[in-house]
Length: 324
Length: 135
Image 1 (cartoon, rainbow over the protein chains, first blue to last red):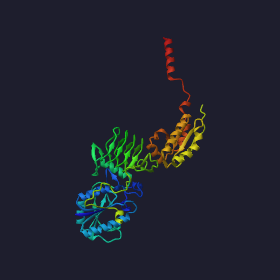
Image 2 (tube, rainbow over the protein chains, first blue to last red):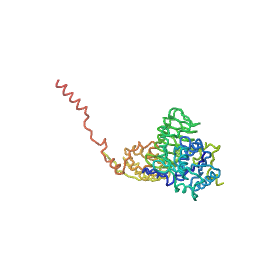
Image 3 (cartoon, rainbow over the protein chains, first blue to last red):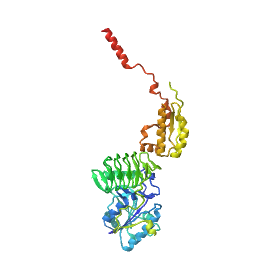
Image 4 (cartoon, each protein chain N blue to C red):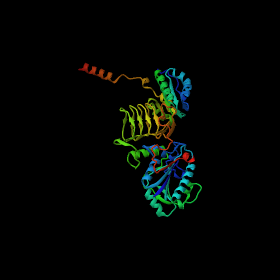
């Protein structure tokens, strides 16, 4: 029996990549929620992690997702309060993750390694660099002003993650997660049904008869693909998006609630509303022409808690709710 | 005989929206109406381009081609390149890495300016005639 706290946050300095690609500097969504909060292949990384820990025996999972993404500090204050609450309830150990990254870990195994180590904190590592994922014994946890600083600074045991890890810091990371998932190279599975081999569809997706979808591809729930469109090469169109007449979308991710206009050639890109990031040219553009790209009116905003979060025993909270 | 004037290089504004298109066209308009206009548009400063900007480029190309001239793009910024590819018009324009390259491309001798030799088949037929005469 263990508790879990998930803080959805932009990666801190601690977790920036060390592979020398410099890709971490390509900030797609300044001031926006991290990619982990956005639907990818039908469900956000945050929601998937919460589901996974729940399935693996977590008695309670608290998720802290800000409504308007501004500062991590506030979230960590609430996370610290929740950790104290868990301690009062006798929940131990507690898994704490700043998401961030998509990490495939065996929660039960990590709890076992933590107990064997005898340390108050165990931190996950992947390929020599630390992940923002800890296992904590609340009663032995050092008192600090900031929970995040305490987690980073305190002496900890190491837990090597053997599974798949994607730091999800850049649009390139998002594309590689989608490609690897559609190619079944990780456990991140599309949420929906397999309409044809390699073509995944969410509920209520509408693809017009003359449109062509070539595998591998993902068409999310409530998506509309108009006539004469072509969707191909590992493209994912997330929920409530719309691709209009005659447009070709190739090797691209169209995030939830985006509208892609008529007769376009969208390739090697990531689109979120009116923002386009082209991976080939490494350039981010804001499209001011609403006939070309825009936030789909039917959807509203992407900066929300995933709509299909299961409640039940799971404790869901956001900074705004907590502030009330 | 070629009667075209010099190659004109023009800087495309940073934001190619409806308003900028209007003022840019006021500058470019008279050039388009000249005889065999030869224009290079320097796109190095372009940071954003609306569909009005893309339409303007197409309209300009149409005008210069009507007058037997040409319009070439040079030093495309990544933003301009992405927009032109997105709008499916990148292939319509001849584009060059630098303005110098684009200007030099106009000075390459055009095919219609090369004096054409007598066609190969005329020689073949005349030789056939000689053979016939000999036989």
